[in-house]
Image 1 (cartoon, rainbow, N blue to C red):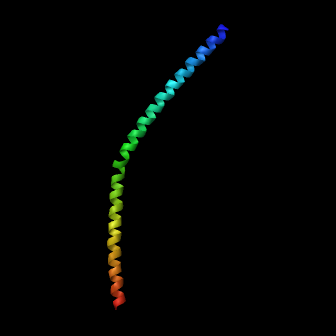
Image 2: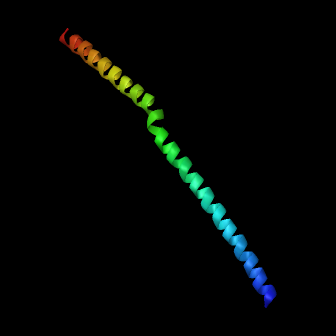
Image 3: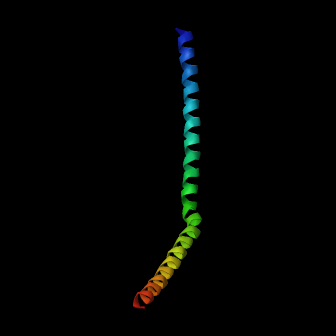
Length: 75
């Protein structure tokens, strides 16, 4: 009976240690997640500016093309 109690106590200690380790790793992972999610806006800002620039350039070229097409149709 004592041997079973000792084995149970040892197993419980191992499991508690494992739970503490997993909780620590989970906390570290959550910290990394928060850090990454806070840095996303900073890293995407240049891409958004580039997309806006491309959209503006496309709209300008489309406007010019429509003017050229209208001129050709008038001839």
